Image (cartoon, rainbow, N blue to C red; front, side):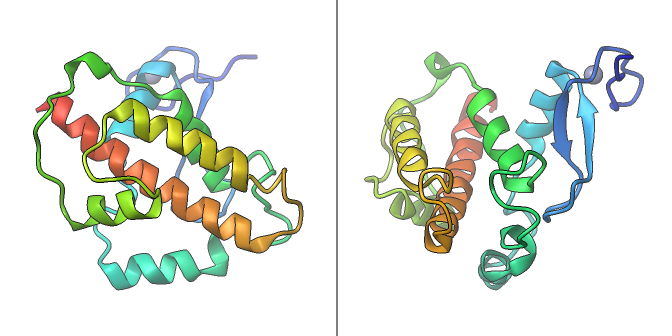
Length: 169
Ligand SMILES: [Zn+2]
């Protein structure tokens, strides 16, 4: 039996996971490709959070340190985010070259070890390199690497949302 997309009034097949909460629960809904793209586009991880909340979130055991929910388990929140992040591409040819970055973007460039305002392709390549380096499956039991990868993923998501806005506006 196929699942139907969980979006209002959509009857396409739902085969992409979209997390419901910003935590480590297994709650997700299934969406079709178009609607998971819509979901990713509108879903800015940091929206509505101040710096302290972001910091507390990153420190929180809720997110990724539960033994039963390692990065490798398929429904882990960050795993879903990470997979969506890699899958969901946008049209790079539409990127404008000059735009301003806010302090969260600048922080994100720093986390990824990149100079501010690089081309999207360079950011993406760096992200993929870092993911390989810090992936817990490559470094079993190393919690520091998990923490690092979490930060990298959040930074990348931040920049992705910023770059995408420049296309849509
Ligand atoms: Zn749909």
